[in-house]
Length: 408
Ligand SMILES: [Zn+2]
Image (cartoon, rainbow, N blue to C red):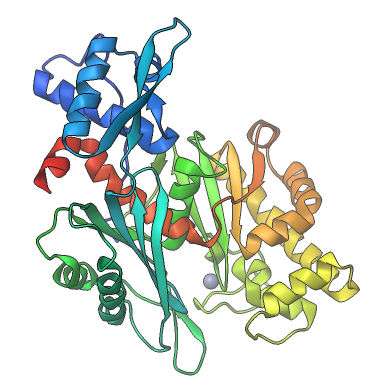
C-alpha cells in the first residue's frame, strides 16, 4: 500500500533550532515532544520533562499548560523533586483521547479504541466470513465501532482511524490465499467512519509491519532502532525497522520473507514458487512435520505436546526451529539489526528451540552482524497489530497536537 504512513520522530527543539524555523514551528515541535514523552513513558513530572527534553522549566510549564487547555493531558498531584521543589505531573488523557484501530485478519475482524498512552479502552471482534475481501470487512467493522460509540463520552477526541490488513484471505473452500491490494479500501473506510469527527484515516498496511511498530514503540524492542519482527501464522512475514523507520518498499509490500527461497528442491508454495521459507516454518509446515491435520487449535496442540516431550511433536518443533535459524542468519546478514523479535506461532517455536536458532545463526551469519544481535519473543501478543495501528493514528496528533486537540 503506497499510502502507508511512515512514522517519524518529534524531537524537542532546545537551544539551536534549524535556521529559518519559525517560533510557531518550534512551539509545534516542542508540544509534540512533550506529548510524545507522556504518550510513550506515561505520567511524567514537569521537572523530569525539563531534564529529558532539554528545555527550560518555564518552557515546559507553558507547553504542558497548552496541552492541558487542549484537553490532551492533565496536570496534577505534584511530586517533590530532588531539589525539594513541587513539580506537577503531566499525564496523557487516555480515557478521552483515543485512536480507532481496526484489523482485518484471515479469520476475524477487530475494532479497538486505544487511548493516548497506549491503553486498550475497548476491543471487540467478529468472525470474518470465508471468501470475503478486505472491502467486505468495512460494513461489519463499522457496525462494531458503532456499538462501541455508545460507551464513548461526548467530549472524547478521536485522533484518527487506522487499519491493519492481512494480505491473506480464506476462500469458501477453507484454503488460505494471498490477496491483492484493495484499492477502494481507504475510500470505503472514510465513507463508513468519516462522520465529521476529527482525525484522518490511515491505511496501516501489513499486520507484521504494524506489530513491528508496536514492539518498537512499547514492546520488547522499545527504544531499539534497528529490528526485524518475524510473524508466523499460516505464512510468514516480517516488519523491518531501520534507523527507527519502518521499511515499506515501493508498493508497501516489503518484508515478504516467507517467500524467500531457502530450499530450491523443497515443496511448492502457494505463491507459485518452490521451497519458500514459509513452506519450512509456517504453521502448515509444523503440522506436516508433526504428522497432524490442519484443524482449529492443532498448532497449539503440537507446541504443547512438544513442551511435554512427545517425540514426534518435539522433532517437528526442532526441525522448524532449525529452518528458522537458517533464514534468520540470512536476514541478519542483510539487515544488520540489533534485535530480532519472534511473534505469532514463531514466538512459541523460538521459545522451544532458542538454542537451535542461535546455533544456526552462529554458524551461518557473519560475526560482525550476529554477535550483538538479541533474539527475543514478542511481548504484546495478538493485540500488537491494533496497538501499532493506533500508533500510526497518534503520529498525526504528535506531529501537531493543538491542530487536532482544538479541532474537536
Ligand atoms: Zn512463496
